[in-house]
Length: 343
Image 1: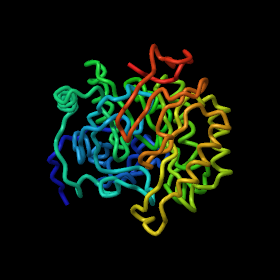
Image 2: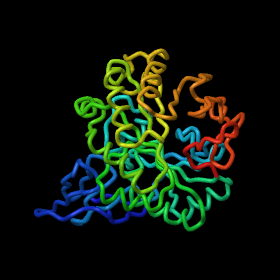
Image 3: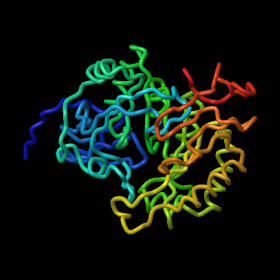
């Protein structure tokens, strides 16, 4: 049946043609083989006339203005605002997804607005935001759209932020890194088995993505959602932290985030705060310099502590900056360098 396309379509950047009217997407490890008229796993990349197209180009299903701390990014232009956008679709299928009403649907099933890359930049400037954030769902499924937007933003001096699970192949991600300034990557567990069952992905790919961020000089922060019965094993958390230290990722902030019942895990209780606190202790003992607890309003572990003198250098209340004692990229009190992008 003929489908009416009311939004722009853009040919995908990473795919190859196969025999019998099939194409294969090369963006992520799913390597979907897609028949004429069908979409891949993510629902966002469609075979039209034996060519692969992004069917979510400019097709925004959610937009808003957020504090940069909400991403969460605690060491990247603190106190700034980000114009945030997302489209439908995702190349993972997390049982605990908090945005499943858009991530687990294709763009023909969601309400959308047309927002071309130049309009995103214009909106960001009009709102006096310092950054554009690709977030809420999985920005790497709307790769061409966020890539083009990031290019325009860079030309205008606007910073760009990726909030992602990082489930992407190396070549496209290295290309992407040329135009983004910061990323928060979800390191959802440190077990291949759990990654497959909980998220329908591969841990090894995410670990590669973390390394690429460092190699490509993209400011990186890492989030680990601690889900009871799934990712709360303290030995696994220690293994994860030891790996981060061994691969010289210990200068980047690590956020342990509290799980709340969502999507297909509504029967699972919220994470006990005590488990998050133990995870934080393990990370600090492993040598991770900046470790935070998220989704626990009012917890002291949302403050930035100088790793040398142990004084608070950024005091936060929720997403608000109450005091900032970082001067010239260093602790005001002892002059220790504090890793981050502060201006």
